[in-house]
Length: 456
Image (cartoon, rainbow, N blue to C red; front, side, top):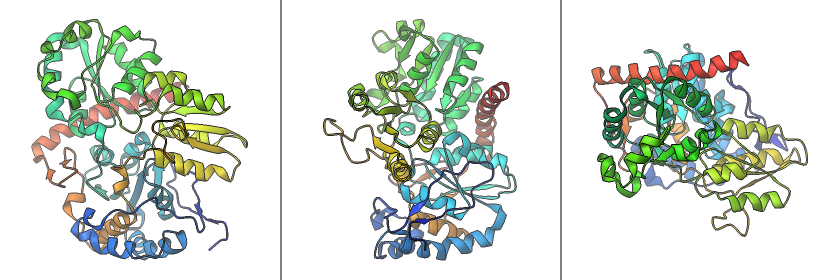
């Protein structure tokens, strides 16, 4: 093995390489999951992994190769491995080694549709991303997730049973004036609600494009689920803050949302609003403050943040954008750059490690002594990190042997309880209806985004 780096090759042709290299003798795993967190079929792999003497590439890669290489050879060109940038460093660093791709949610969603020759798609990220891939997939393509308990707290605060009553009330009040935008961080059931309204899905990379399109269609928007992204996007389009209304957080009192008229001032505020935001949020991005931004700027650093951060943070920062935007800015930064990044901790740790050799300093926005939330590398997405090397090795080996657990297979409309692992699956008729409407919302997003790229 090379003295300095372990090279990674075989990136999917239509996705740019992340540029990640594995540093020799540098641990590739931030933490290990307890054995009882694994499904029974995955425990033998976890036991072997936990028994390894350390987490360096020299030790982990031969073990992982023993399971992944036979599976890659077995499935050949029919296999597609995918991971999100927010994954723990171990998966992000490893997935490209086996011919897979790492990207943001927009690019991941399109991979099955763009690669009809791929019939076995294995995703290491959160469940809603795998479900989105399955909505756009063809019938011959099976989508699998390495850990079905890998969820999203924002999505958990925007379940269909919470949102349906609110949508009914808004449609009764505003009728055809209303259009629903569903952020990618939602289940297929919510994307279908958007599709039924004639709406579209968006990601953080195209939210402004989609919201502008929506405003050209209708006079009022319900944006689900992240109220920070909804507000930042609306303000970025020039909508005055007094015409943006955030519904109460479902964490505080989901029952009140069943009757909006019972919430003081809610109906009047909605009547004045152009954009109505659902009350979900991302716990990873709401720890950021404008004081943290100013701290780094006063030290001469450039601050870049994700738009799921609060408005005052986005406005104070030197730039903001999606994970793809942040990664490209970091990886293209000239030598001597100093960047403080406000997003998920695993992402920042990976970026800092990869940038160091180029003479670029990268720090997490919270990582300074004066921050109330200061912690080395910042907060990571704990649920996404439930996908780890034993899950990847086990998923591929079990698939090769024809013994993959059915719960790891992802179909449109599936809902998995993150604590118990119990899955609720729609019948065929219900699933077909969901796919029709959810896909229409996704197709609108794709058309809006790609037509804009064609016009640039």
